[in-house]
Length: 183
Image 1 (tube, helix red, strand yellow):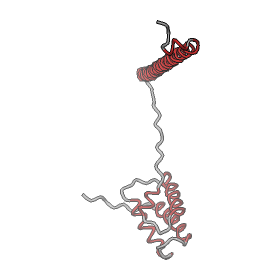
Image 2 (cartoon, rainbow, N blue to C red):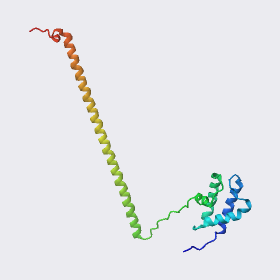
Image 3 (spheres, rainbow, N blue to C red):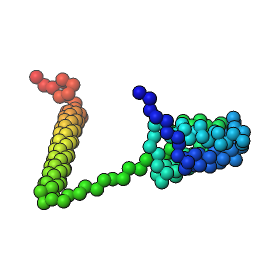
Image 4 (cartoon, rainbow, N blue to C red):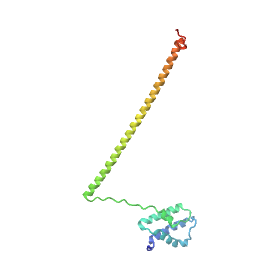
């Protein structure tokens, strides 16, 4: 099934003519068409841009101007209609306001908001508990490490004390340490 051809609206052709004139004025773009071809070029572009789209002058004319500005600032060669389409800024979608009109829908909305807030509060409390648990586990590991370090230091001090006492015993009684004691 073929779709019926719809000619581009005049405002679209005018917007494209204005944009193409801007590009021609640059005169530095490679493959720029002749000035006397501007009307025909604009019509071809307008058909391509209009194809399969529901364009509105108030909404889309500023977007087309912006797209041509982007092309003028960034292209080195003459663009194609697809370049204009791709350079169009995205449509701004207005946020729909939620209308609560009946008492029941208002209560329903309040319950939903309360449930969401309770869920957020619960997750916050769970996160705090997990953080506290992690901190306790970390503190326990640090305490165990300190205890191991202290035990290691005590053992080394005991070993040094034993060696020192053995040296002192040798110095004070050289016979006892050399095995010449009386027997």
